[in-house]
Image (cartoon, rainbow, N blue to C red; front, top):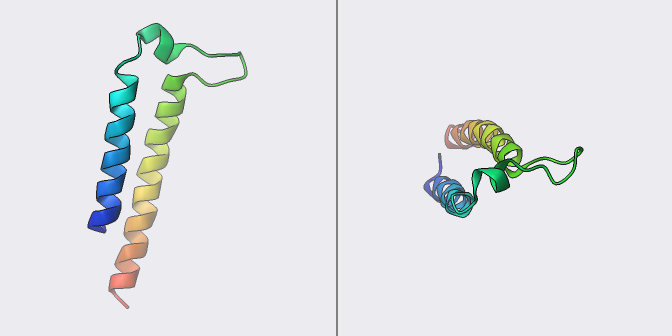
Length: 67
């Protein structure tokens, strides 16, 4: 993957990790409302999304390199 893109993903992920480690388990898992996600659920969603986005970007960059 492009180094700049890869670095930005890691920078963003590390910043999020730094922020959520300041939270208690209660804060991390608390749902503000029954129809709202907890911070833990949002983070899980972001991990799944990151994996998919990295795959798509990597594939696109490989196609660009081969043309």
